[in-house]
Image (cartoon, rainbow, N blue to C red; front, side, top):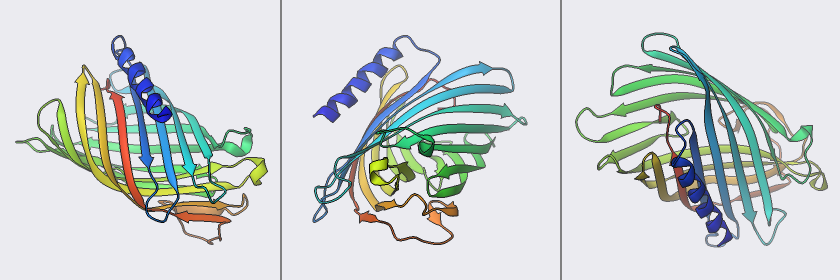
Length: 296
């Protein structure tokens, strides 16, 4: 119940901001995955992010952002029981129109990922991205990009393809960043839409010194259905359910790192984790968004 109250508080806060803010974009959400079958592992996560424009000219714009994410794991038979992990980061983005139809976006983001029992230089991570989006017409745009991140297990490279297509007649839309965020949706009107989504996540968190400064590697892919409902103005709520597959939690020693990985898959030496849990199962999500930027 406490977790539900936390989400309702976020809903109330963003609803209040919607009444007077015309220059920000806010997003808050919760995800729950209960225990299933003979697995005693359950997880609960929350995210809150905000984006603020800094300056905007005819062909370029600067913006900044802040985001927070938490992950709570519960397992009554292992070291991850009651493990509460957090991340907080700030970002700086630069967006420039490089031609009549193409826009380039550069983003950098330093962040802290740990259990927050103590903070040191070992808890810091860094990521950056470069994207080019070309708008072919009012209904179709396509782009490409690359994301680099320093994870606690090593360097990670993720190439991506951005696509957005709206059918000329009808209300179908296909879009998202491939391969991690594709989605298909159908809009009944300007307030309600339903659809299917696929999402992949790869995170690493630094653990405290009492756990020998090991790091936890978290991987999850999930797919499911969602409904997107406009509440008022530019305030939306999204709810959905799906199934998480290829989901695992693994703990490694701090020196068990690799030079490079693609999509979270290690291309060099593989280590044996000190702890591993594979637990696929149902996932429930709910989120609220204040969409004030034109690109949203």
